[in-house]
Image 1 (tube, one colour):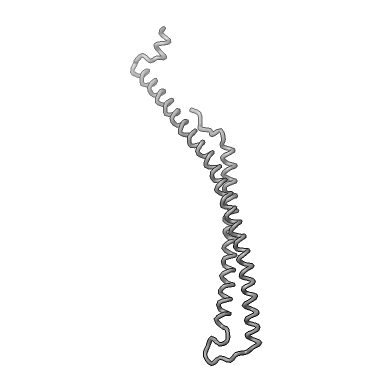
Image 2: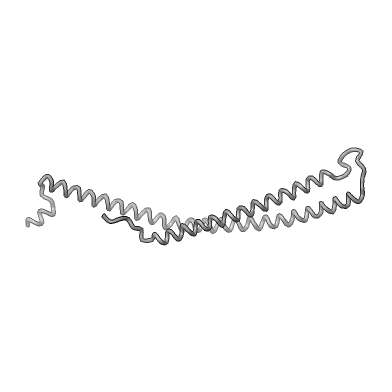
Amino acid sequence: MRRFRFRLESVLQVREALEKQREQEYQAALGVVQIAVNHMQQLQQSFQHTLSGRPGVLPGERFDAPSIRDRERYLSVLQTMQEEQMRVLEAAQANAEEKRRVLVTARQAREAVSTLKQRDLSLYEIETRKQEQDALDEAGALRHGRNTPASQKEAA
């Protein structure tokens, strides 16, 4: 009995490798998004912390004009950094979404060939079972001395 051999096995292997590569690229893009999110959260926490430390928050606290000016300048810088980080985050998210679309396309291409392989394997298994059953029927007929279509042809 011949062994099952898928005619597009090399195509399937290439598509599986490509899908794996696209999955790694997508995971890397998600990592960049997570780093951008973490940095954005740090900036927001710094902003909130600095904002909550403004003079006048506590009763009886004295106002110090230079420290107020420095704090307001720092808050302005933090806001600018947050805006820039938001642009970085949006770009990273857009890149991750593009990588996800490419991954889905690669996965669909691999699944198409994989479906063909499963169909061919099913047909092979059906044919193999049919051949095995024919061989068993032939052996049973010979053992019990019955006439088989092959032996009837030989007698004629």
